[in-house]
Image 1 (cartoon, rainbow, N blue to C red):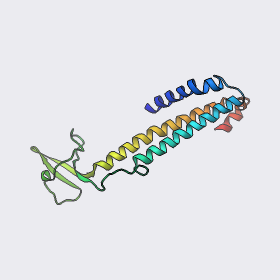
Image 2: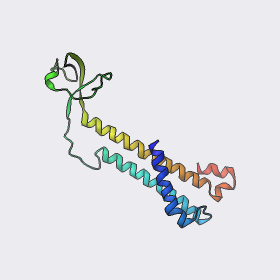
Image 3: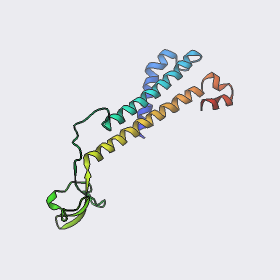
Image 4: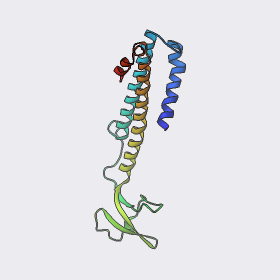
Length: 165
């Protein structure tokens, strides 16, 4: 839903302040072709923004100072409010296990697992921004395709409209 709002706002600002003053509100002829070309250019810009954001958050482009393999014991009980919170080594009941164990927190024993919290946070950020920018690129493509189908050539015959798809 956020992608729709962000894309719609950016597209309306571009149309209102850039394209409409230069090409006219309902362009015909070469102005309509220019409008379609600008819409496709916007699609490429949103797609490149998505790729850069994915590469940056996945640390392929922007190398961060993340220490490797920062695994720690965390609570692994989805019904608890503190699910995913770190647990100290001294609370582990069976410390000799590798990935799963039980920890004593207060008077309760809860399941714990070894997880890399920094890696999980990085994956969540990457998924979030990639999904947002990919949707905005998709909406830009839909908008460009709609503008293409409304051009004079494609309005002449319904079969021509199928060519743009």
